[in-house]
Each structure stands twice: as structure tokens, then as C-alpha cells.
Amino acid sequence: MFGNKKTPAPVARRPRRINDEGFRGMVFHRLRNGRMEVVEAPQRTRLSTRLVDRGIQQGWIRGVGERVETRPAGAPTTPWKTTPNAPRPHLFHHFDSLVVGKIHYKVTHQPDKYADPGDDKTPVTDDVYQRGNTRVDWFYELERIDG
Image (cartoon, rainbow, N blue to C red; front, side, top):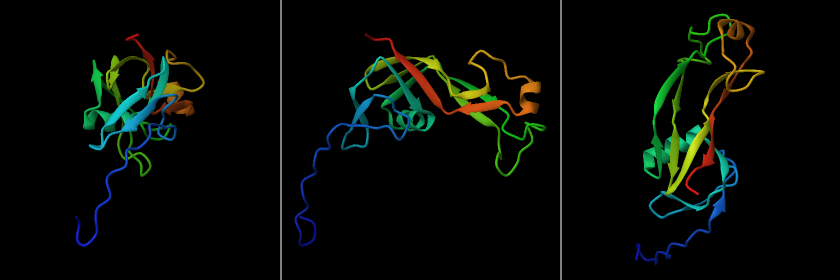
């Protein structure tokens, strides 16, 4: 009882496919304690850095082989100088793999600053920065390695 009214029993939520936060094909079920449980885990998927950070803080994602990378975030002519739009450099957490619930994924694409156009292997040189030909990817691409 809560005051004069009966508190309704919690309703179990149905598993749902979450696409607005960077999921591609992964289905989660939010548990009552706020943690997430994997219901459907595809062979290949993509997770946003925001979601991975939150999952690590809450304990339902575990990163393996963490490295931290720093990249300039300033204007093309002065990439390391801070601006109102870029008050600090970009900080990226790279992992060898991520364990989401009980599902083990190899990271095939790291969040980072990349040459644009170009692929993950195209070096971001001073010339690339000065031309402004860069993009920032705020997601991990993953490939399932546990079966």
C-alpha cells in the first residue's frame, strides 16, 4: 500500500529492438534493476559509444583490452587549440572485444577520427586536418565470436 492507494504490480516489459541509440539488429530486455539482458544477438552489429559507456558503468557490458586514444577536436588550421565547440580533445576508448551480457564480440571498427574520404586504415595526417577532411565515428562495429 502506498498512502490510500494500492501500488500496481510492476508490469514486465516485452523485449524490444532499440535502434535510436546505435543498435543494429540487437534485441534487449530491460530488467527491473535497470540492467539490460540480450534476447537476440546477431552475428554483426553496431553499438554507440554512449550505450557502451553506460553498459560498462552499469555492469552489463565488459570491455576487454582497453586502450585510450586522444585526437584533436579544434578547427582545421589549429586542431589542438580549444574552441567553444571543441573545449577539449576527443577521447576514444578502444577495445579488443566487448562482452555484452554473455555474448562475446570482437571489435571490428573503433570509434575514432578518420580521414574522409578514406577507410579505417587511411592515416589522418596534418595535411588531412588542414583540409578539414575528417569524420568522427562515435560507434563500435562488432562481430560475434562465441558461436
